[in-house]
Image 1 (cartoon, rainbow, N blue to C red):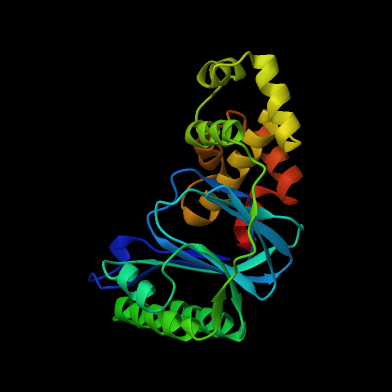
Image 2: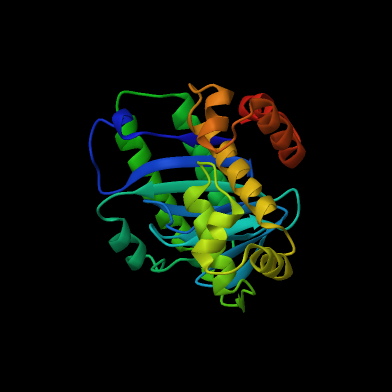
Amino acid sequence: MLYQFHSKEFSQTLPIQLWMFGANHLQEPVRRPQGVPYFQWFYCVKGQGELILDEQRSIITKGQGFLIYPDQEHIYQAVTNNWTLHIIAFNGPLCSDILALLQMGESGAYHFSDGSIFEQHIQKLLWLYENRSSDQTLSYSKECYDFLLDLSRCITRTHEFTYSHENPFVLKVISWLEENYARPISLNELAETVNLTKDYMCALFKKNTGETIIQCLTSIRIGHAQQFLIQYPEKKVIDVAQMCGFDSPSYFGKTFKNIVGMTPERYRKNG
């Protein structure tokens, strides 16, 4: 389950501030060519996934996690269908300095000698969320700082990266799809962008990734839909469908269920 916060919920600006957190989140595929405007820490509860940063891949299993800095291109996605993560995201004017001092100066995969640390802080955040007080901004900030202090004592950087087979052509296609997923697009338009014929482009993409461009686009759209269903509980499912490039609500519902295994309404309720 994801818990998203907004700036209007905070009464003051602090050196480090909670942005969102997630507890036992069944992770959907994420491809972000421009990154996000906040820091993200992840811990693997179960299953197996992969992290791709700077065209390098690392496998993430139970007892491991990863850190992603703001505005950094990244991809992470499940290798097994039960890849489940805890997530804590934060930002603030002193985050970079604090992380550097705590030996977390760069994005990447990390091994945890004590996985209970992440679990303990997730439970504390859940408690704070369920017992909101007038000084919640300060409480969340203190918890983020305590989390980072505790984490620094039980992590070591994992260096066993292997080069990602996703070549610049594939990354360019995925980046374009990620930037344009919310609107109607055509393969002809994409072919012009990458300066190839449509047939050759499609064949080359399928050869390198094992999936079609349309399958990739659908995965991107559904991934964003999963995020938006939780992030914007006030929006109707039909509105989320349109935000993600689906003109037909029925097709969106069918596609969502085929990929996620449940309807958008059930996913939102479970999240």
